[in-house]
Length: 147
Image (cartoon, rainbow, N blue to C red; front, side, top):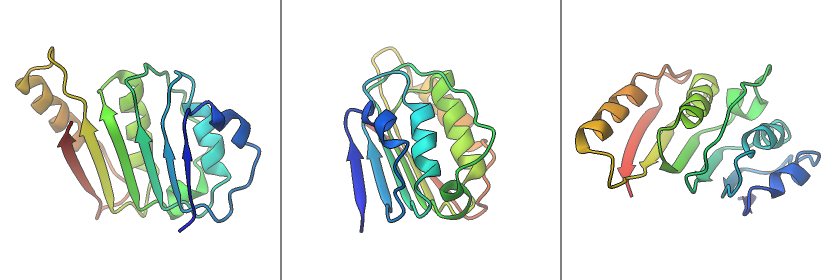
C-alpha cells in the first residue's frame, strides 16, 4: 500500500502541484488553520486514494466548498477517519462535504474530542446531528469513538 503522512499539514501547500497517481492512504496532521483548501488540491491529484485520515489538533478552520469534487471522493474513497473532531462549524461543513460526495465510502470514523466543558447531553446531540448528515454512499457506516 502506498501511503503518505503529512505533518505538519503546511506541507500540503507544496504538494498540491504533484501528481500522486499511486497514493492509496493519506494521513494529515494539521497544525495551521488554512489546511483545507490545499488538501482539496492534493485530493484532486490523488485519483486512487482509498483512505483519508485527519489527526486534528483542534485548529479552528474555515471552509469554502470547492466548485468541483475530487475524483477520489466520488469514485475511490472507502475509509475516512477524523481524530479529535470538535464539532466546530468549519469541521461540520467539511465533514458534510466528504460524506455527501464519497460514493464508495464504507466507513467514516469520527473520534469525538471530549472536553471538560462539553456535557454528555451535548455530545449526544452532536452525534445525533452528525448521524443525520446525508451520505452519497447508502451502505456507509458512521462510527463514533471518544478520545
